[in-house]
Image 1: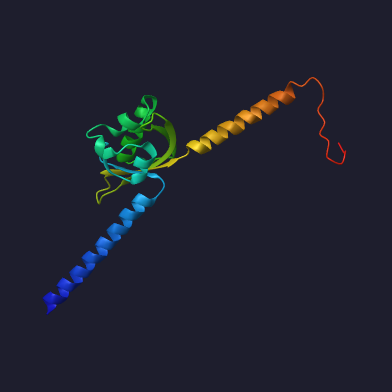
Image 2: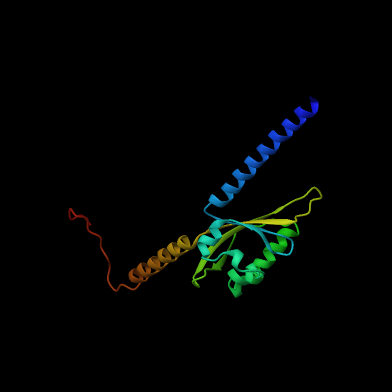
Length: 171
């Protein structure tokens, strides 16, 4: 009887763990952000679907290709590798913007944050990196700065004064 109760308890525990794992997996794939898990060599051991949707590339099709060499522009690869190494060594990671390249050759600006998964001994065998696509925000800021510069130049180079008149004729 005690054995049967133990088996039922174990079965309930396993079912609960499967449900929680499925929930975490669904959440992982639903988040509209890139989620990557790197091992100590810097290889991706897990990723979510958003990465593939954003880049138009399936990681499973890349084989043994290095993720950074494939997705990160050459000018930023050293920084990306150093960030992963720093987190694995125990440093904290501040947000940083590192672009990635899509299958079509377009660059997307990604704001990355990373943290190490610590084991009982304090080592970080894995790095969790989360990236938000901020391409449109960066472009909007650029357009705003360009418009401001244009209007500032216009007003600074005017030879005569400029008046603003309301619809009722008041200056």
